[in-house]
Image (cartoon, rainbow, N blue to C red; front, side, top):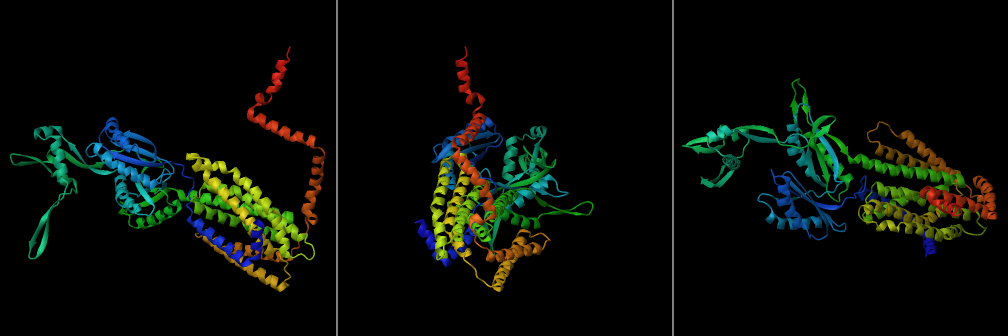
Amino acid sequence: MIDAVIRWCLNNVFLMTLIVVGLCIGGYVALRKVHVDAIPDIGEKQVIVFADWEGRSPQDVDDQVTYPLTIALTGTPGVKTIRSMSGFGFSMVFVIFKDEVDYYWARARVLERMNVAQERLPQGVVPVLGPDATALGQIYWYTVEGEGFDLAELRSIQDWYIRYQLNSVEGVSEVASVGGYVKQYQIDLHPDKLRAHRVSLMDVYNAVVKSNIDVGAKVIEKNGVEFFIRGVGFIKSTGDLENVVVREAEGVPIYLKNVASVTLGPDFRRGALDKGGVEAVGGVVTMRYGENPLEVMERVKEKLKDIEKGLRDKQLVDGRVSKVRIVPFYDRTDIVHETIDTLKDALSEEALVAGLVIFVFLLHLRSTACVLVTLPLSVALCFICMWLFGVDSNIMSLAGLAIAIGDVADMGIIMTENIYRRVAEARPGKSHFDNVYEGAKEVAGAILTAVSNTIVSFLPVFFLTDQEGKLFKPLAFTKTFAIGASVVLAITVVPFLCYLLFRPTPWKRRIVHGVAGGIGLLATLATHAALMLGWEHSHYSGWPTAIAVGVIVYLAVVRMTKERFLPLEENVVSRQISRAYVPTLRWILDHKKTFMVFPCLILFAGLTIWLGVGTTLFPVEFAANFFRP
């Protein structure tokens, strides 16, 4: 089977070229589609039910709100456990579902149960669902700042302008306001005046409630036109409240201002937002469950640019104009980009080290190129599998990919080195196809067996559950994908590349320099485009670096066309290694018992460090005590 695959790859050069190009395009698309975050979300699937009962003690809330809600939600399909919390004036119930339950299906079941629980709750208590977000949903924090604006003004701008605009962004579940003062109308009653006018607290309460309402009636038709009749009663200022009629005594109205003082003031609060020792107003953007954090953050930033254009400004006493600004102080984009850059650095360093090692040991650039091509292709194939299996890109999954890069390079090195040896030691009359095919066939089975053992060793990780499974499964998935991709590439792409690059090139000097110059020019343009894409806001032109890369590629191509295939015995590096290795191996094989002392000592030292001296030397101590007179 493996031999047939290798033969097909060597016989179908055009189709293999299309497959490699398609793999690159598919990897790029998958890289853009895979959800990217900094750390894996190991939180449980929970639905939060929140209920307000203002002014009530925690004990009353627990007895009359939390307990009935918890009882009603018990027995919901797929529920693992239910936790609750009661505070002053509010209740929170956390419904934890099993991992295999769909999140939005769970919210629908909780909503059904809440309708049943509504009948058992006190009048006026309406439970609501919390945002459809997880514990890692907070992706963006910002402050609303402006010189000359007090905390109440900034909080009003946040609550009535910024928050509503950000809520409309696709992928945002909720925008919560933090800090500042919530402006409200405050009525301070005077007990003496209440007694003098014989007004009770309920009279004042009912009068205020009834006054803050618009009343609608029917219409009056006049001259063929309908006029709507309505009474405007919504309160717009403290004066409107002061003129509310509480009651009348002998035809004389008693206004609210006769028994109380009406002012604008801050709402009662139990927390604040501090920035550099100064109190501030801010907001928290929460991402919806299942969204791509990187894409949502980009949408939020674009929306903030539009919002800032319409923010208020104020002229200060000194004549300067101060404008409200939105200042971020937590942006997960930076962490995500750092995580991705870590993988880029690891891959780049691995490619350089692998290329250097191959070149030093084989002194052959074409062999180096055959191995290095497998690194980006294995990453592309790994991301395609991550996209298909729904594995997010985070620090754990990328760590598994970075760990597997060494194995990916090893598979390519083994295949390339064996094909190189076959081509270098080719017998007269044997075709180039047969040399490459036999070299690939000789080690393909061994590569498959070796990698299969590595993949099987990771199977226990896939059986982890709960937080441990969510934390370590991405690493196991990506490492398995990358190692599996290395086998596929080593059996298919590496022989194909060796077949193309190891072919003798009896080109004329003019053709060689023309081809090398064209490839160098393409490398220069590609490098400059990549630099400009990464340094959009830099003043560096990028041409010196791009030209240097082009020259290096040009020289490398020229060098490749002139390389000879030398047997490993004629290679300087291989000869030096063999000069030290062969005598050492011969001594070990001639003195097996003496050599086994070293592994035993290493094993004993390791057990002593792990278990302690008292455990490993216990037999000696026991024997000494036994024979003691």
